[in-house]
Image 1 (cartoon, helix red, strand yellow):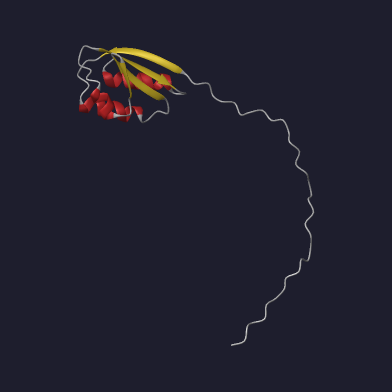
Image 2 (cartoon, one colour; image 1 turned 180 degrees about the vertical axis):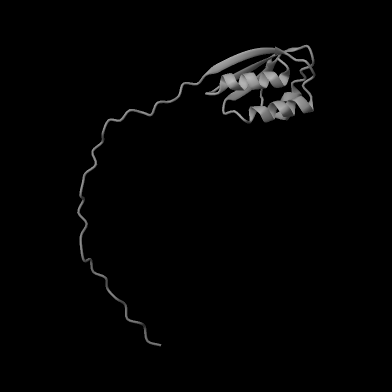
Length: 116
């Protein structure tokens, strides 16, 4: 079978730049300042599976980073297993720390879950 003829493409127009881009001074977008809040709460019940799950689910509704501290340990409130691993019991003081744009709202909601 004979080879098929190939076509040669020739440029029909050349592209000229219509504008040149000069670097311009721009200000960086304003970064919202993070808000931080802290609240100490005395637990009304042990921090077992049910309250730890409720706490994690409530924290998931907020964009702020929230930690719970008990003794010398701090854990992410979104982790049920980490919360349970703290071993915090009824009558013990824990500290919630929230950092982010909705920190105050997160602390209020999480405190309500903990009974504080």
